[in-house]
Length: 428
RNA sequence: GCCGCCGUGGCUCAGCCCGGUAGAGCGGCUGGCUGUUAACCAGUCGGUCAAAGGUUCGAAUCCUUUCGGCGGCGCCA
Image (tube, rainbow, N blue to C red; front, side, top):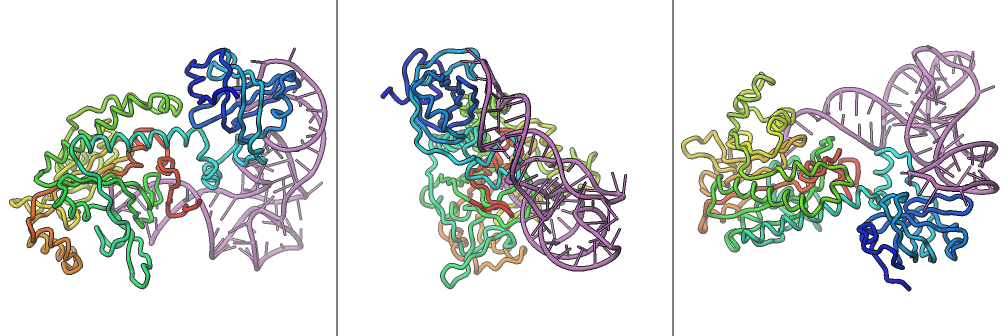
């Protein structure tokens, strides 16, 4: 048996005129009287294989159907007529699993391929997106590690809300009522008192009935939290992370971007420092287009998009009105109406990250809870953090899938995750 | 929570406005084809038109309700 080769190696021209074997699945099949063209895919690419009627592989090749698994042995030839520039002259075909008629064909709707998600994940598109996703995760971890952050593992079952209770998924936990976490932030806040700089990459669950191309009910959240830091430290870290990830991907995922038709130049253009504007400045800039905006109104998606398109690259909006932010947001002592909160925005998507300074003063925190109708007694452990050695600290959370949508120019966030959960989709 | 659009063979769609025998392409199957690029040519199989109710001599088509899907707003990452 000839050595098993990955298809990408053949396409890179490393096996030309050599006798090799590949293993994979039939991607396309075209037949004529004396010649069969097989396109074989593996995890790394697609290669055209020819089977002549005179080849010992002919009989088996004839039986093959789309998505059958096989191993194939033959000699690699450079050939301009072949897609990819190389093909295998087949000498032996060994069918491993003969496929029934594959349901996904040329004509397919978005709806249909969502029903066939378990099979659609074999598509070139999903294969490539999942590889980029893995690279983004790796680059993210690498940056956190470089900056001396410790990765931690927060719980998914929680007993109290992080933010408003309306978007929590409730569940029966034996005979108790629990929730799925919407953010690991409060748990990271616990851990900074031990490990100082911490981060996690974990799912967050939101029961928002949002029917948009930017929402999942289960999404992966990149969250960091650290002590002895302020808003400037926070923004510097976030832009550093974003820049590191973009530059790494621009370097390591060139093939994937090319095949997906995604614009890699916008990643190369990401450099520190990012533009920063205050909420106040954002309102002033948006007023001409949206006169209804006044200080105190939340920025809508359309507003964010106008700003994002104007910058054409990632940027920060910070110092939001306290009234539209969560109870744990720290406020300026001399301006309690303004909260130390920052969003990172990107074109087309709007918000991909929210962060801020957390209120470290116990009494102010209790007051903020009461203002928002929360019971301080539900957050005893959170208040303990302010009782025992409280410290100024900051943190942020970034939506991994939103980041990928922006990076890869995806049409819909569901393609940024293998098994999307939306209000209507949770199968397989 | 509010609003809009869609549902017709396995898949993609036409037909619906203006009611009168359900159509095409792809896929499958059969045959043909000397290099194809999700090939091409010929033939063939395949549908109680999402469901229920109503109007009508007659409903895929008009009306009502329900179910399923997609998207927008709000909210969010």
